[in-house]
Amino acid sequence: MEYFTQQLINGLTLGSIYGLIAIGYTMVYGIVGMINFAHGEIYMIGAFIGIITFSLLGAVGITWVPLAILLVLIVSMFFTAVHGWAVERIAYRPLRGSFRLAPLISAIGMSIALQNYVQIIQGAKIKPMQPVVRGNIPLMEANGFQVNISYLQIIIIVLTIALMAIFSLIIARTALGRSQRACEQDRTMASLLGVNVDRTISLTFVMGAALAAVAGVMVTMYYGVIDFFIGFLAGLKAFTAAVLGGIGSLPGAMLGGMLIGLIEAFWSAYFSIEYKDVAVFGILVVVLIFLPTGLLGKPEVEKV
Amino acid sequence: MLRLSGVHTFYGRIEALRGVDLTVEEGEIVTLIGANGAGKSTLLMTICGNPRARRGEVRFEGHDITQMPTHDIVKLGIAQSPEGRRIFPRMSVIENLKMGAQNFGLAHFDEDLDRIFRLFPILKDRQSQRGGTLSGGQQQMLAIARALMSRPRLLLLDEPSLGLAPLVVKQIFETIREINQRQRVTVLLVEQNAYHALRLAHRGYVLVNGRISMSGSGAELLANPEVRAAYLEGGHV
Image (cartoon, rainbow over all chains, first blue to last red; front, side):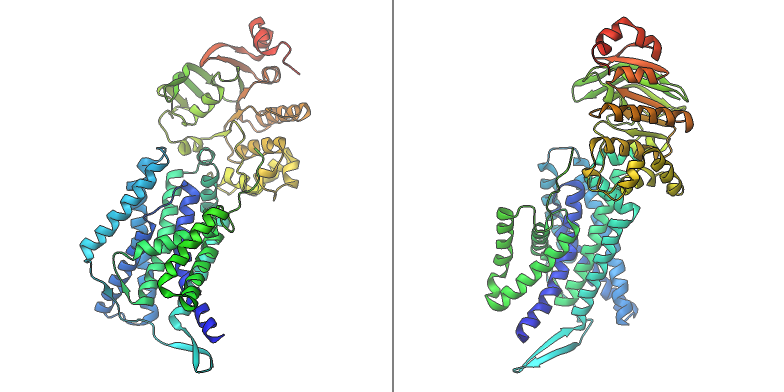
């Protein structure tokens, strides 16, 4: 029971991170109907900008932890969003209206290009970071096993829930969110109603990238090491999460992220840690075969 | 108000409009009739810049809008209820109406909503229902209502009577007249239902294979033997 609770906490932490990245996949798929395979790299860039900002803040003497984290998040979200915007502008917009496979190939190319870009300017070595947030809250103790939730885990889970709530509200209630849903359902009609479709799509990439940046910063603080290749596996897992939840569905991405995090944590704990990635991608295969629309992505019956 | 001169529009290599000249003056109802595939819907979409005219010129109130992006054209005061209605299926009636208004300012939203609900009371009863679950007639009303929410000066209507029961058709045409007379909205109406359209319109154009073959007042066209033979005999309600 104690062991189970501990894995539950670890799984939710991991799931929060996957969920934040998965939102970017699902929003972009919803609005332009393509899988942005460079999104994992956007998350990796978010992590790098985070680690650079932490050391810059340390250099100028800003060491009060809450302020430092807040500044790092803002800086990383901003610059990562710029990268997300540029990726769309360079690699996808010129291909809009071209055959369906073209942006997919371009996405894979973009992913490789971004990895190399970071490798060249930051080096191929692993980047370590000193822990910023230390300390645990012991929750229970039995049979000599203590269940802990760290302050950092609390920050990650709470921040994720808050961001997801904010983004759901933006999509459901604001004019921007309505325009995004309109573009998703009928782009031509949206433009006839005065929606600047290109700008709306750009903003979708910007929003997805900003959330991925938060995930990147959180991972940096959580594991303490990053390298230029972390985007590949995390991106694939978040993509799996988006498919599991139902690609195109925002609550689906959040649910899928949490489930993938939990599956990974429990599989590592009870079966074998070496095969945790196999378990996750096994889920992808099973979902694609038996539940192609995912858990929450059921297509609605519509009158035409 | 609106002037098309020598407009050619292509879909790939297919020439859908082959040099169309057409004008609409402020305050008019102008109808465009023609068979399936004559290019009527293409003409309305060309006015909105999707697809763009490859040759020729479209002017609206003195602006050359031929090369403008669609979202800027409609902000000059043109609204369209397009072919197939194109209601957002996973949005509620209210959200569809908000989409019609939000890029033109939501300042008058409540006031305009009252006006729309007086015009189409059924939409008030269905306001939280999803667009995709409305009946065809209700979707048509919603499409017109959504176009009106932007307070347009020129309203482009594409086959508002398509697939509707005769009683609903009558009601829709009545509403178009009301919009034109009471709210001073200029209307360009595309119709296959030539009889009703020509009776309602001040002037009409006949489009055949991408070219204007005839034009005149509604009454003139109604009396014209060629128009009668091609679009009215045995066809009207």
